[in-house]
Image (cartoon, rainbow, N blue to C red; front, side):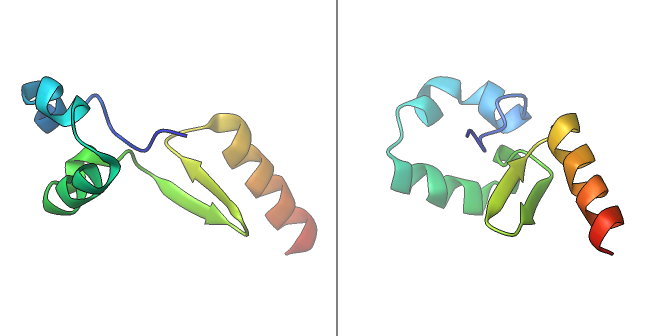
Length: 68
């Protein structure tokens, strides 16, 4: 699962630098530059859905309708 938004302007401007970062460095950079994080981030129980995954979002909606 990739939470890095490769479409963000920050990523586009600094692609080589960002791609060379370690996991910790990338996390620090995402804190400084939140536009590097793909959205939405949805936590459904123990499952994390990143971005606009239509199937996953539809499954959540069905589960909410059935249980809610």
